[in-house]
Image (cartoon, rainbow, N blue to C red):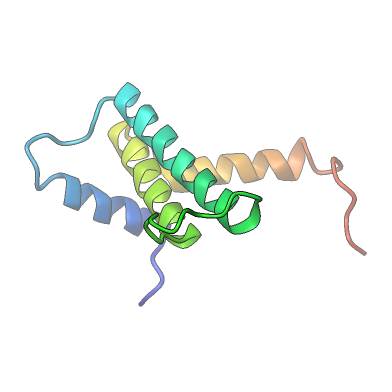
Length: 108
């Protein structure tokens, strides 16, 4: 499978959502959906790395699947608000590289 840029992923999700009359959910509904997906990721992490094993009748999911679900909802959220995730990422990296540049101990 080929690598996709964030911009390409946002366009692909937008094309997918635009097939349907309902379109994107409202921001509040999107936040609820993101929270739900984050909870599912937390559950998988707890099963895989924590002290709570899965029940024998529980569906087998993976951290990779849950991260993908969360990424999809995040992209939908950004698209619905006309936010470029690439620009958002650049803003946060600029913050880390300037304001927080001396916050952690660097490797030598």
